[in-house]
Length: 538
Ligand SMILES: [Ca+2]
Image (cartoon, rainbow, N blue to C red; front, side, top):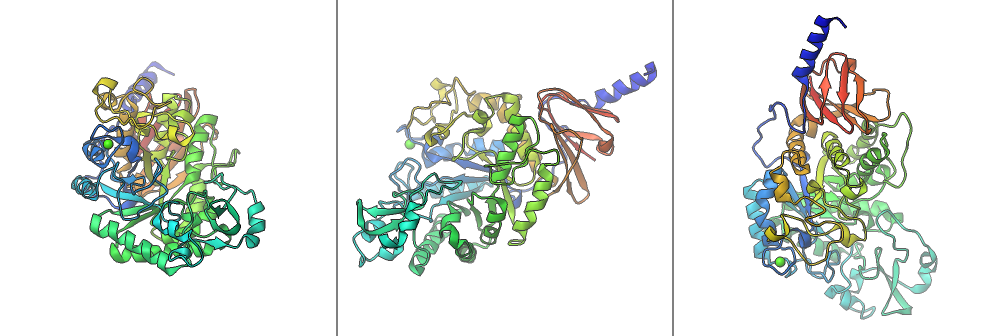
């Protein structure tokens, strides 16, 4: 290179070289919130572990209210609250009163005040509604167990022991349950009728062939939407309303449920947990605003750990590794399957939730990998869900209690909100930098999340389509996002090495709007550091 050319090259390089996960220019639309559901960023809270207001060591509603400023500052638009109704278990997925709040968490009045405070900050509130099964201790089931003539007998599913011999012998598990025994005797009496409990005997499935059960749940939904003021529901175990051989009946039930809820609030948000491959999950789209994409979570984390593109399409239990696999094509193939059933379908993306090992632990607590996972999540399509503490890199591996450990707000001596209902194994103020310290650190994971949430607010990232960009190497994930006149190019480096890429295909993308790591681009070459990312605009 001649001296003059060299000089021009370096000047150009200097102009567009950038460091750190920050937006370089701010042309994001200045929207007045609340945002529409299809542009929202969500935050999942396990109430028990989030924030304690009264010093009993158990997270509660008033504790959450005190942390709304933190959530607003993070930039989220909506909260998904794990179950809060009375229940004997710490996780509260076995409800004993569908119209109540567990006293450990507070009162209905506390919850109304929380919702009001959230709404003032333009944050919407979505609550877990666990209607596939009740708790064993629910008065309906306690009554139903008393015999064939009990008032609530038909609220549950019963079978004569001889009719279920074959099913009893089956040892089939599913993505969301390791349980192999779905029929359970009452009080161990195997000579009498058995009840159906997909997950285990402590969670008897409700009988949705009984119109009275449907009516109960529609009334309960109306109570939370109207009297209390929530904006929507996360529907647990949505795939199991009926057994798998009656999948069409499950689809139809949710369609009816959606119609009923929309009578109460036309803008109600309903998100379903259907842990299955995209083909099996897609018919459920008719009954929901949105469904979680389990494949996406698996693809992102596997791609980062394997340092090559993994595009899962089989609900996270298997995946393709081949040179042609790419995330954009998987999205463009499967999304129409859902839109066929719901033209306004919203896809929900996430890295992990309360049922999966925490992201930071899956990625070996490697900060560059953890940041890359977030960079991928927020630049790909879908409304992202952050699992509480993910933004500070909380650690945790199963059993379940240890992926639901107390949120670490501050150093031990300063942390007035930390819950202590359980002894954490993975996340302490020593193993994870507390939230209040990360808030003040521009290079922290929390600041990385904030900048990505801000980037996601641009229409092109929330609403834009996706097209694959091929750099001919399996350790690069690259794509364009396109919305109206706006086009963005996104390049992620999965490898632990600096890469130099031929930038000719990016020649129209002249401005770096976001980057992670020391990135530089000239007309001919794009340089990304190990696990670095760049977002360019035309
Ligand atoms: Ca408390």
